[in-house]
Length: 59
Image (cartoon, rainbow, N blue to C red; front, side):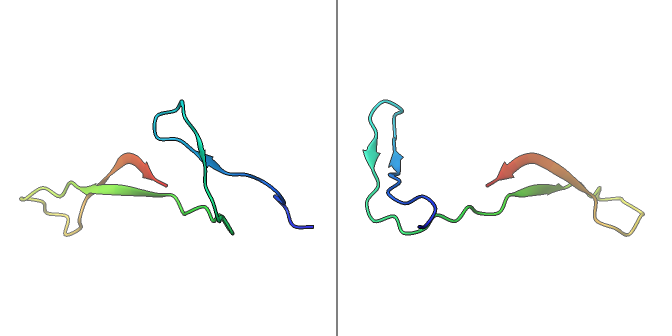
C-alpha cells in the first residue's frame, strides 16, 4: 500500500474556508534557497565581489 493512501489535500485563501484540491497525484517539496545582495563598493580594491545574504528564504 502506498504512503498517503486516501489522503485528502485542502487549501484556503482566507484561512476560514477550505476547499479540497482535486486530482493530486504527487506532491514534491521544492528546494530552499536564499538570495544574496551585491555589496561590492565602487572603490573596492579586493578584486572580489562582496555579497551579503538577504536573510529571506525562498522555498
